[in-house]
Amino acid sequence: MQKNISETPEAESYFISGTAKYKSGDYKGAIEDYSAAIVLEPGIAELYNNRGNARNDMGDYAGAIEDYNKAIELDPTRASAYYNRGNTKIYSGSADEAVEDYNMAIEIDKDYADFYNMRGIAKDDTGDYKGAVEDFDTAIKLNPEHAKAFVNRGITKINAGDYKGAIEDFDRAIDLNPDNAKAYTIRGIAKNKAGKKKDAIEDCAKAIELDRQFAPAYCMRGIVRSSIGDFSGALKDFDMAIELDQKNAEAYYNRGNVRYNLRDTKGAEEDLSIAGKLGFKKALEDIKKIKNK
Image (cartoon, rainbow, N blue to C red; front, side, top):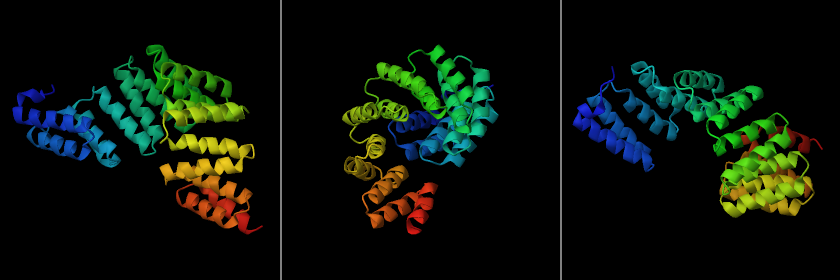
């Protein structure tokens, strides 16, 4: 039987302080407080679970998983620990293992929509689009106003080639949250793939109106503009996307292609080289093609 943190006032004080720091974004301070509480009470699963959340948000995925493992060891019925460990596994690139964790969370609590939503994301990452859509369907059935589930189902439908269905999902997500710049941007992706270029540009423009710091909206609008031959407009969008996010490999890659079309071979090679260094493999192939011409 799990001991209650309130039985040890000093440990509870660290727990309360750690939770306040976590909510304020002070993850380092939260970790220190949770660690101090663990020294006093090493057998309480919630302390490890919460410290795992802070470590995850700091990008320490290995440390987070260690904490979730300990929380599960102490309390195998804690659905949130499986769920949180699944989230960390997605972030660290282990979607298959994440699905297993979400399975365990759902076995413990079948009525929590977010468990299905996140399992759907993990299944999408593994290429199981049918399974992903089924999970998003369940999340939406459990919570008909789950805007993120509509967005995620729309993304999976794009991946599966169902652009019409994707647009319908983004329409619903936007109905639920009209200020969702991400939903407008990704609906723009679906419309672009469906050949609705003008509508795609309008969606990206709306996303930018809602959030002028949202780099993906500029990048997507640039892609659409480039596809209709508006290289000048596309170049401005990619410039802005890169100014906002200097690690945006897709923006560098597409700007490189625009520069090549504008006969700026040197600039094209520079951008494609940066995109390649950031992990965009096709960029390195394109550099070879340019040099061989």
